[in-house]
Image (tube, rainbow, N blue to C red; front, side, top):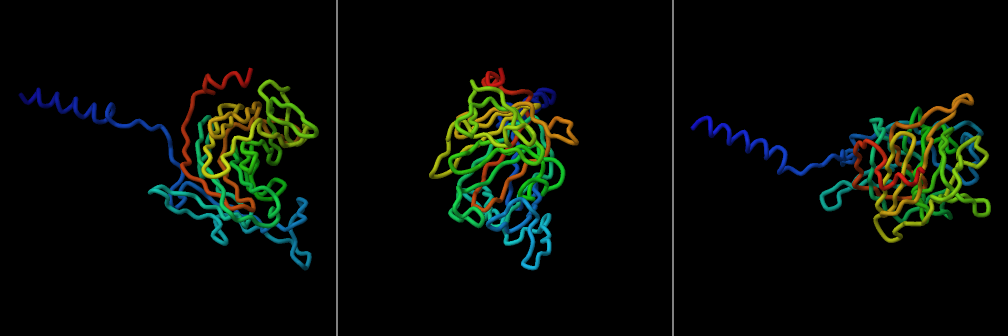
Length: 288
């Protein structure tokens, strides 16, 4: 009798611990205290910025605000239906960046725009971005704010655009229309980034943005390849992710994740990540 009861208990424990529990391989990166993130802030950039170090009215160099200060409370959280939502006011250039490095993963998140815009982009589309494979110190690119990385652009009418940050490069199947390049899965494989001769920017293949609410973003990256998906549509595929040091190209396949503050109010939520063992078969054709 005791043996039978023991057997039953073991079976119940086995099933309760596995079969009847929801399986969720995702790691959720957002909480109300931003415990998985660090902060960097650089400057209140002014109109006419051309990449040079900002100076005050006396011509003295202005120091960047720095790490983990959160001046003007640019980065805050709120609650929506019991879940944390990240609010980025945007008036100071900067970023949140993960404390942990990641490689070979599927990243999902939701984003929507606020109403505020700031100098120097008052007359420009609202702008933010998710920067991945981020390495080194902040402040090493044109805006003296972000890390070496690959940018998944988040902007009005251009979610999923590619921007190179610092010395990063990537290859995209693209077609040229006028002076601009656009992702096209049947296009010519083209290198983008500093020193490639093609600039550091490529438009997403389609404008898949939801203009009036939350947008679902997904980044799937494995090895040197990545797929960008906006509201269920593939808008960009990239390969041969790399960066250049003293003229030598090196793989850029893992690192931290940055979320930009770039002169526009924006909200993010449901930020989650999981490890993968390869590019899903349904997207393999983008790399043939």
